[in-house]
Image 1 (cartoon, one colour):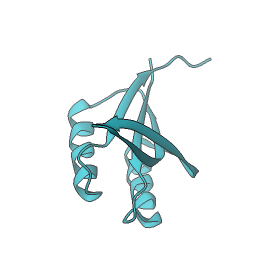
Image 2: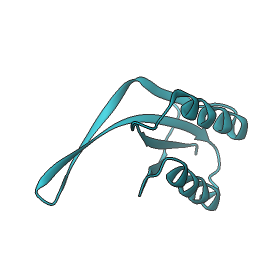
Image 3: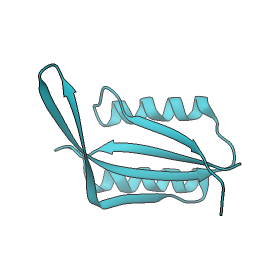
Image 4: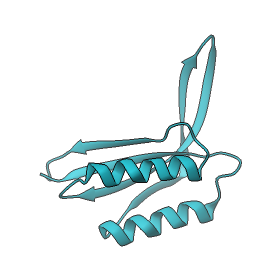
Length: 98
């Protein structure tokens, strides 16, 4: 069964197009393709304390037949450092092709 891996990248003041291009290039090289939802960044809201926090995000997707969890954990940590983020969400979904 194939997997869909989604990376939710925050669009910050320091996030540049070349950063996204580098991420896309790296994932394309590693997995043979990538889909990026970047033209209309999504917006995430959550409560922290009494305040509502807001993020604009770009979603990057990779489909793969196998998942190396340690590679993805290392990649997430590298992205967090590169983008100066406490946490970047990388999620995994099993799917069936129709």
